[in-house]
Image 1 (cartoon, rainbow, N blue to C red):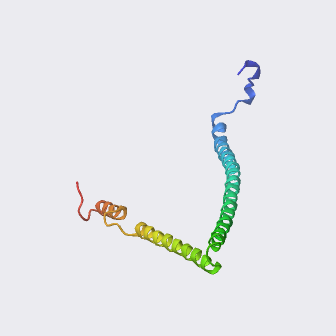
Image 2 (cartoon, helix red, strand yellow; image 1 turned 90 degrees about the horizontal axis):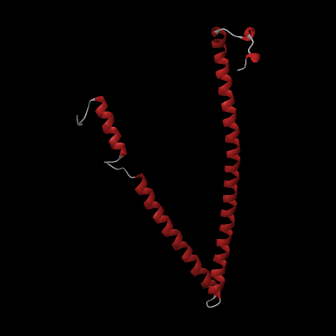
Length: 138
């Protein structure tokens, strides 16, 4: 600070400065919260737009899959009667759905089955050790 900018009359006492500190801290926290809100709003807008575009892409992929199923029926109908071609494609789709359902059920059962030596039991043993009950190593 240059001497020309120094004004002895504008000096504040330490008590005045300490008295202003809580207000300045509150103002700083509010400014940081406002900046965080603005940043979050911008990110939320981009995330929402991205999710919307993914939903649109999934919708078009679903319709494309339906068209491919119709194409399979039409292609089989060239060599078989239409009813048989439709039946073959429908049975193939049902078998695929059944296979995926069984695999999904097995994955869910594997994910939700209790593991006697798993994390839950480990936490229970730790809590018992803190309480001083059960078997634990010193």
